[in-house]
Length: 128
Image 1 (cartoon, rainbow, N blue to C red):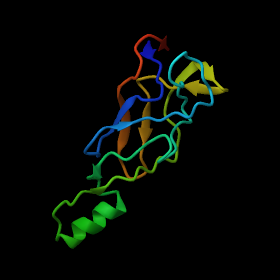
Image 2: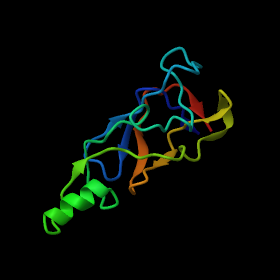
Image 3: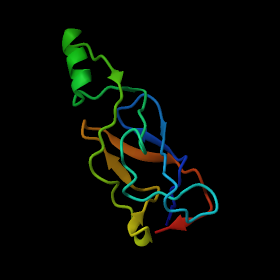
């Protein structure tokens, strides 16, 4: 069983230079503390914030800066592009009709990074 994910959870992109925080809007308050997350909490700049600088060549800004530097990898600001929901989520725990987010879920960035949970904001509620 994994931890239920709430607002304030620390997340990290595999190509990002710094950790970020998952923000969850208070639409589905199921815990007494921070709002609980679902797989649909994947909106860039609302739920998923930038991770410092990006070093993925799939990011057009990184590719352009690297080409301008004659092939020397040049990290650029991270602007996450997360078009699809978190996977897999918890299939048996629904919040507002959507699967709840647990600490084993992953989020794919369209530029090539994998965003994962590094430190849940709460450690008392476990879900499958």
